[in-house]
Image 1 (cartoon, chains in turn red, brown):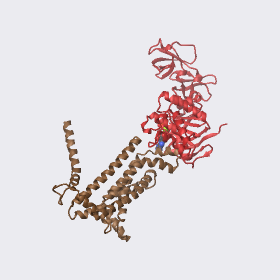
Image 2 (cartoon, rainbow over the protein chains, first blue to last red):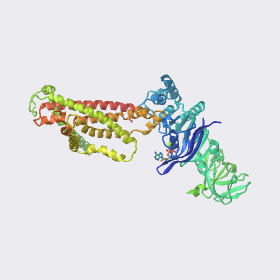
Image 3 (cartoon, protein in one colour):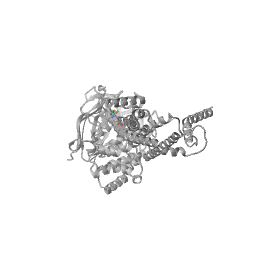
Image 4 (cartoon, rainbow over the protein chains, first blue to last red):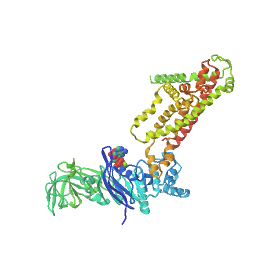
Length: 363
Length: 264
Ligand SMILES: Nc1ncnc2c1ncn2[C@@H]1O[C@H](COP(=O)(O)OP(=O)(O)OP(=O)(O)O)[C@@H](O)[C@H]1O
Ligand SMILES: [Mg+2]
């Protein structure tokens, strides 16, 4: 079994009186690709900075490769970082920037030249070796930052939104290359991104953070299919969130009432009658039709709007009480419909997720 | 009306320039005037320059001034750089106060510092000489070096030093390979300022120099008291040209460096 490469135990970081990171527990295995995902300001960069050694945790401990690092300086940690703001050295050429880490390790000249060339080829910037960073575009600078970190072959690579400035095509390409490199060299990646698709496709494991705390940690499909909290359901992808009251909590038959509608819900046995809950159902799990079918759990709504988004059409409906609902459907269904027409919606209760309303009470 | 405003501004700018530079220009022209009385043009000559270089008093004073300026520049650049780095980097109790203390020499009248030093020297029984001028100059010059460098450091991205450490550079390597190259133009500008401040400083030098060891400004002062000689015009011309030359070279070098970095 792979052992832990990075371990955070009850790590907290305060700036002034507010916690940027609070009581974080995280074990990252050797060779794992772990992604931190969360809204702006939730503490992702701060977490990386503590692992790299630029911030001292107020509480808790960090281990890297089995060694407790509270007294280890950043330059003695087997960790390299791709900084969110690139931080390229303006007085050095691109090649000198990339060579910096190897020079510090006293690698031989020929070896440095060879590895710098390889790294620059990886990020498709071999022709720019002799330029100064400020003469490059934002996306090019970002790729130099990747090359500068990756050329050192560190045990742990921290990447803070490393592809944020790239266009879609180049980003997809770099995603593949990074993932390949990570797997080939068995490097441990701790990756921060705002691109959910990137997180879902590249990661072995995803950590969803919110206000300095871990909201949920799991495999990409777990996070998407079985969000643990309302926050995660709302944050990852698009979803419909309905607020309601549990009407029946029988083992075989559970329903909730929401704005006059009765909706079947999956019974996880965690709810009791009359409890206030949230329910989340993904737009692509909702079947839309123009005629009422035979299914249970059938709801009717009026068509408000349709938005073409490429492979599918986004259908925006409205329930009689004004609550909006979003579903994905094919164009064909809507051929005969115009705005204001009646639509019939249906989904498998098992595809929806129900959360207790603890978030409300905390406020 | 807009056109009128532009013209007025243009003329005003010209007047300011004239006010700045006509006296200097007149001085330079009259340094070639073939007449002992400096107010009427009688003919062209290099005489005053020849006399100047054969005047051992002036040459000695020039070397004294250069010596003091060089020593002052070295000491104040090193001290100022260290102080600025400390002030910029470390938070410690009383940091603001310490920072303020460094500004004081910039704003207090020279005469106060001069007299203070004189009192100190007599209290310590120090015999006045050439070297006794240096501490006063170092105090002024260091303050200016700190001012210039703090401005440069404020524009320095701390994240660059972190990036260096992230790549395995210890404190020492980070300083030499990243911090120093980035603040080098500031250090150069500070050193230049220190040099010129020391070179033309009069009040402190006048009070704290010993008998027989004149600096150039002090000597010029004593010469002018006996009437403005065209020799002094010649000397001033040389000084002005020398300073303009040095500043032009440094400015050109810094400009080139900034261009290479693509503006830091
Ligand atoms: N040096 C600092 N001093 C004070 N507060 C800070 C400092 N660094 C971060 N913070 C605060 O800590 C919180 C977490 O910041 P952090 O940079 O880790 O967010 P993030 O998750 O990386 O956000 P983003 O996605 O926008 O990069 C924020 O509220 C931020 O304002
Ligand atoms: Mg961040």
